[in-house]
Amino acid sequence: AQSVAQPEDQVNVAEGNPLTVKCTYSVSGNPYLFWYVQYPNRGLQFLLKYITGDNLVKGSYGFEAEFNKSQTSFHLKKPSALVSDSALYFCAVRVKGGYNFNKFYFGSGTKLNVKP
Amino acid sequence: EAQVTQNPRYLITVTGKKLTVTCSQNMNHEYMSWYRQDPGLGLRQIYYSMNVEVTDKGDVPEGYKVSRKEKRNFPLILESPSPNQTSLYFCASSFIGDRETQYFGPGTRLLVL
Image 1 (cartoon, rainbow over the protein chains, first blue to last red):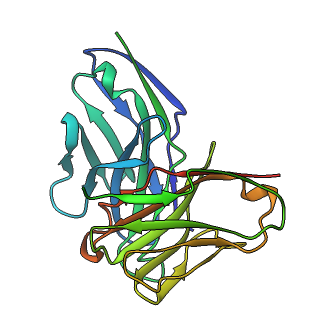
Image 2: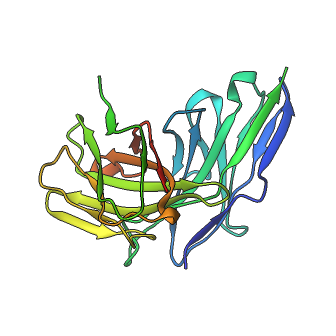
């Protein structure tokens, strides 16, 4: 079965400090990986994706994520957090090929709190 | 403005009373999908559609139906709603060659009594 795990329900960080939101996955096959952000009372917004190539992916709003195949992880990072980054973050995966090729699997979400 | 719209945004209903949540996109996207969001479970895919008249089950399709008669519309139908379908529902769409970059609607909050 395909699954995505976000081990932290909540991450607290001070403004200006680096942030990391963790994600690990388990799929039968090669993954497409991505991150979405959800602000209060809004739908999800796409942040970034890994398809192939360079393991470090850069996305919107200064976010980046690193694909680590041996650790099956895709952690979201930002060098300097802003208060406006406070939101709910979702990691998701899609499998390349096979029966589940068109399906998406999301993690449970991590709430990021950036304090001034 | 490019957008995905859902109606209604909020709905309170009773067990067994059929309801439909509409979803419409104006971006000519082929791929459309429905998700439900529950605390601690994240988003789970209910159904998706690759194009007109092409639909398939996601991870949690039980109790739901969909149809795709037109490219822009993808309604979600609950024939006989039950309290365990109380949730926040999102519709999303994308181009078939870029399914990762899904555009999400604003959500529909459903309460089934």
